Length: 73
Image (tube, rainbow, N blue to C red; front, top):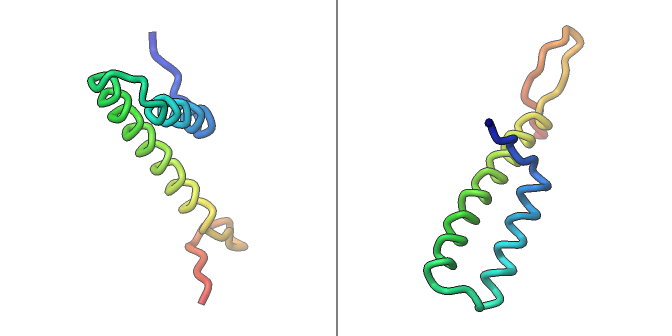
């Protein structure tokens, strides 16, 4: 069964939970390392989604229906 990819907000909630768990200091070292690695993977996914959204937002629709980069000079 294929797992559904989490959206940005779901990933962010999961990342925040991991950070709170790590900040509590009540996690054994091995579990903390595992959670840290998981958090880094989630952070990368979130960063990639933000970069993709930024690229999409930084385009302008021309009259002919094509997209081009929007640059403020």
